[in-house]
Image (tube, rainbow, N blue to C red; front, side):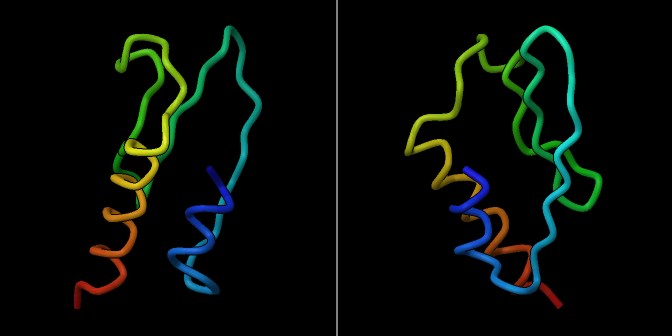
Length: 64
């Protein structure tokens, strides 16, 4: 997933990985949560969901 986000944003994207407990997986963009495994039924993001996150990154980078 990190590779997909880097592919979308290139040098304009920084990724911070923070260890959690109990299978926590959350993705934040500029402080806004764009993915939370717990909120999505405990499922890891599939390809369509990763594409949605890429679109959020793309839109945010395109915004003035």
